[in-house]
Length: 118
Image: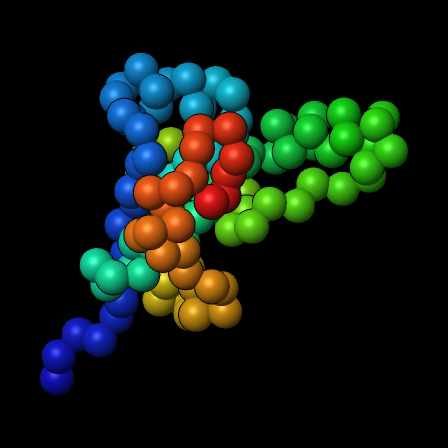
């Protein structure tokens, strides 16, 4: 019986070196990442750790916006490449991305670094 589990991988909009990995872990936050499912569909994702999410929630509340909402928000105990990959693969297997709208490659080409997701 063939393995029908979706194949999920991370696609970084910019460079993602060891330095970027360390900075993301220190910040507790990483955006400008796509989950590519089965080599075809792309979904914008944003990673937070609980500490950074709480900090952003408190800051937003001080400005009258008592919530944090990002499309494709994924909260992890720690922002590491291994944890992000594992989460995206598991979420793909559980059908999480089937409930989201993929971003087209055309729309992705039109995106800029200041507005995420495209």
